[in-house]
Length: 454
Image (cartoon, rainbow, N blue to C red; front, side):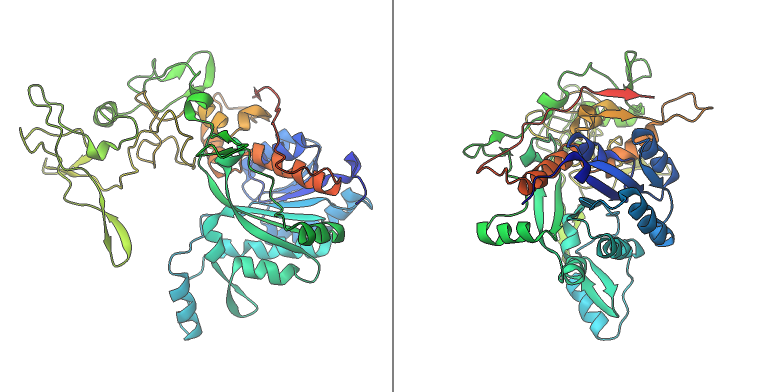
């Protein structure tokens, strides 16, 4: 294989969000020529971080011809190295895929989420632009998510394989990002296809996968480091407390701030032990402290997990109200709030974070209460957990704005692929081309110092 130069390393990014994944491409030496993102605020962030890239801020279905023609113009005769696609995952679901397919074959038309069809224009661009590599990142349930294709109901990954089979070869892999030194248990499906004939021959002859070798593991496998913990990732941040505005904000860091909790929520949170849910909190009444009240849980009804409805909210010994999530009805009565055992739950210091979503700043979200402080995560902490803090990030501000757009940052963080993984993967694919593969090789990331520009 001929050795690749910097001019060969070009990419197109689809469903780019704020361009977070592309930060990793840039660090690996790959130039993103063109980006496509439908949400204007996120496209603006992508433009701010990649001023030399063309950002097309419209629905991919409406601009697919424009993307193709502009890509050809920007490539100016060069071969495209990669198309990176991170389509929306909200419609992805494996639940009931078999039943849905059976009903479809019986003529019963199922309800399909149109967002899942967005893979089709992406595949069309791959067919037309013929990149050396095509990479898709999505939730693992994409494996069994169904879309309508050529008049049939098909699994997305089967459609990808069929669409590309004439020229491309590849596979879909379940990837735990914590295995690559990212302080977060974030499991995703990474689909990698190549059309390079020499790479395909290497792949068949070596029996290897197209994934880089993991550098970390949960059980300290040989030649691997232990997972990076929350303590390592955010233990250095100044303490915050969600009781008041003064204690919820770090005057030295405008992004290290958290929402204030009302008095009742704060009471639930402050009595929640590390690694536990507030739904299982025990009695805190003076003179009682009974710790054997029934804990919260789930039951399986018709094959679906449902949270228990009879979890007690009053102490079985003294009768006082337990610091468990509850709601007050119009008549003044108090009843248990609906929620799973992952809601109102504290994280653990000596484990990676749970998966960050766009709801990571809500205490009721899955496993998002700080390990020891009475609050949720701050934006700054989430940037570290998502490895964005290792890269230069520009946060665009509207001329009339007086505050940093925390809502935009929250959404972009929750929906993005950790740029460290993108960098590791890009370097790995470049090494394959450059015949620089080494057995048990892993990358020690050396990102830039975090520098948020607003």
